[in-house]
Image (tube, rainbow, N blue to C red; front, side):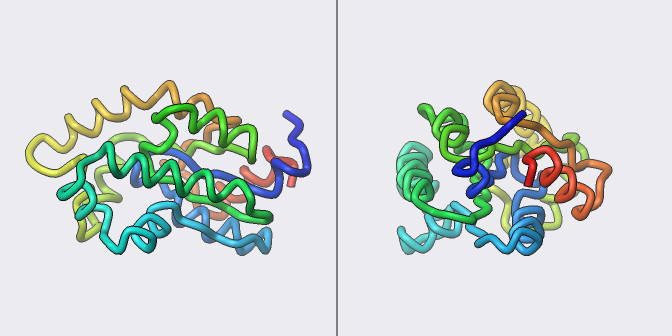
Length: 175
């Protein structure tokens, strides 16, 4: 797959929480000498609240509107790796816009790897709070699968090192 020079200026990492978007994004941005941006960090900065507070006070729909606004603001950037929230691609035409404005890479991992990774995080993600986390995880992954596979390419991070994943992205992106 050939990408335009404009697309190569922005690499969007999509995928479910715990698939390595932030870790891979930081490493990839260092390798390419690109800026690293995490859309969740931008949302927290802009709103003055944590993601959890936004979900608790304003609910998911409000969060998705903030997320969309932040996504649109990234289209003017040059030389950036953008880590997106796990559900960003599932709303409106976000995945289509990402693909038009950059290279869309979905990172995946097996459910047991995701559970293992996110259980190390002190903050339980808002959409997985409460009982039956594994069941909720599987349901969300199934609901989002179509959007995730709509990216330019998909990389399973379950059994690869961060360095291998970054190298794989660079090769597939032609960078």
